[in-house]
Length: 305
Image (cartoon, rainbow, N blue to C red):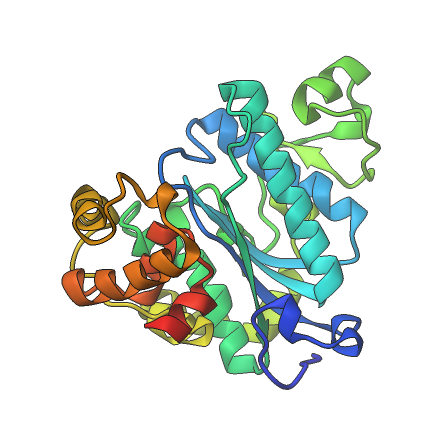
């Protein structure tokens, strides 16, 4: 297993030689305020199939992923350039689907991607567990293993998988209906009866099993609250006293009284930075929550507050 020593969270902070070195990265998107990326079962299926198609074009390995309604997570292995290109292409595909299905022309415009270099085995284990625990942390399901839209079912499952059909054995018309594309796919790509490309086709579950060594280790971390450990690596660990919606409901009054503006979109960058301090002081909002609300980079917010 290979680790790049030294933690860098943003491309601008990484030198050219480092960008060409392979390492493990935790990739996180910052969710939309008003829209969901994935709303229906069909959205999630296409979202997972798009992962399978995206990875064909880049020299990256996917160790883990999780799709939530308004954001997504990956743990990847590759160079920063390749991991970034893969993630940006996946974001682009999400935006294309939202335009086609919902008519949202610039749906993903304000969605940002954050990359965190994983520099040791403990952090790698925690990052994988963090990604797979996302539904539990969000209150979606009691147990992560019940969540369908992640890679969690692949690890230590003794090769079990549902009845599936090879994509390349299908008619061109059927393949296009599933893929929404005429791209060539490997013979190893198989789909279940709902048209979902099985994650076992494109996720490196074998490497994850070697990292954890035993299913009990993975289960232990899945049952432990690892969120703050991982979010501290981002510099954005938070203790939320109010929901985003509760703060936003009061924020416009704060903006009018402080800046004489009607909405956050009318604020200058200097005023938006001052707003970060006000959100911290008035609502006890944390870095990650402030970044979501103000649409500022978490690293910028972290330096401000």
